[in-house]
Length: 90
Image (cartoon, rainbow, N blue to C red; front, top):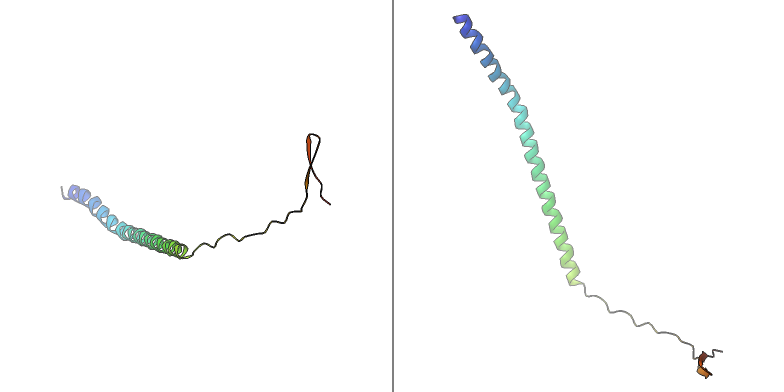
């Protein structure tokens, strides 16, 4: 009976020992994931702040009016010859 009890309790003890050995690695993985999530959150927050600064900066800049560009045209008189309109440029 004691051999049977030892056979039943021994695997249970091995499982609990192996479970304890896996936990530190699992905890480390969870900590790394949490750390990565915090980094991502911080980067996202910094990006949003930078975008807000850019938007504020764009609002402060007053758009310049379009420059007046003179249009150079030749003085070509229009002549009507028969049914046609003709420009005579010399």
